[in-house]
Image 1 (cartoon, rainbow, N blue to C red):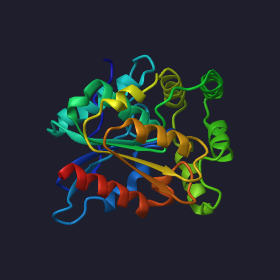
Image 2: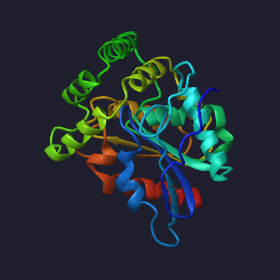
Image 3: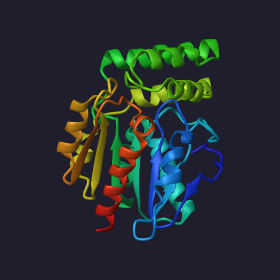
Image 4: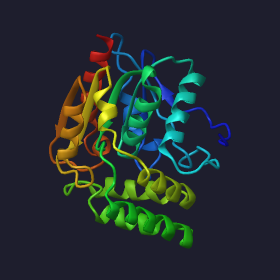
Amino acid sequence: MSLPSAPAAPENGTGTPIVLLHAFPLSARMWACQLERLPGPAGEAARVIVPDQRGFGSAPLGRDEPSLDAVADDVARLLDAAGLERAVVGGLSMGGYVAMAFARRHGERLAGLLLADTKATPDTEAARANRERIARAVEARDSVQILADEKIETGLLGPATDPALTAHVRAMIAEAPPAAVAWAQRAMAARGDSLEVLRGVRVPAAVIVGEADAVTPLAEARLMAEALPDAELTVIPSVGHLSSLEAPETFNAAVRALLRRVRG
């Protein structure tokens, strides 16, 4: 691996460790509400860890070929650095893809699995071609403006989203380095089917989806929940793809329910 040492991931709280992996093309800043509010009181305590993924936020991109496996291995190294043998690992959208890669490569280190607004099925040929189109465009222009415009216009957020949240998401997208955007697009395009991986998960799992998610819709969430041996599905009404930002309290309640199941 050619990845330089990354800064320590932001964390808060003590108790059951949970690593939350951000969506594309955002950063760990999207988890601000979860970082503040999930740790909880004694008896429901959690240690919430929110790393930036390769190239985003404060994380270096490195020189590895685009692969979600490389990002999953980064998560394993994060656990090593934090002195954690096992943790609940979860993610939203791209973060969910990485969580599933982690389950395949490091399943013995899972205490629980959280999959939000993501999917286990691979991209279609058309979707892969579109990812490559965007990767080339941001590289050629050295700008992510096209991505910000297309993401907002194609239903990243629910139809009733507060304009202030839309502006916040647009600003986070604008911070993404073009090289990281291109690398991540190609890594996501190369991922395979993870349904068989989910069938082998032997820890409590939660699947969360926004009812109005047009990017990874409810049908995909149901596929994952049905594949997982011990999963609870939460559908959040009237929100889109970024459910943790659009309905943070409902999202956090579903995460707390998973943590209670993990604690037994």
